[in-house]
Image 1 (cartoon, helix red, strand yellow):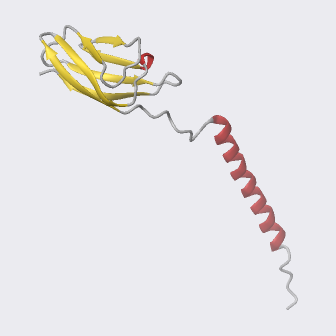
Image 2 (cartoon, one colour):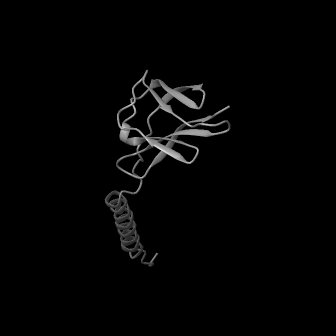
Image 3 (cartoon, one colour):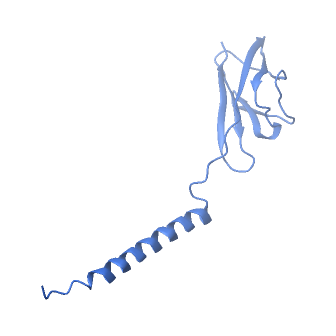
Length: 124
């Protein structure tokens, strides 16, 4: 009956203020440092592969227009960087492909170092 419990309320209040300050500082730091930002999404596209001797003809069948400076065709330790955009219906040719080569169409975001393999084709 004569106990004094009023000191608990200020301690709880101070603890809550400290917790809110730490959480707010963490949120501000994440926003300022760019943590939690979404990486660039790779384009979506489908391709058709036709072989004529040692030449592989790649046709863009559908999906997004691919920006030329972001696309590289890789095969047999060679790279072919595109110099123009690749739209639906356009074709690209690579030569000197041999049986068993793996051809990759790779997208690299021009604003970051994000890369994505759009498709892979095994030369029969």
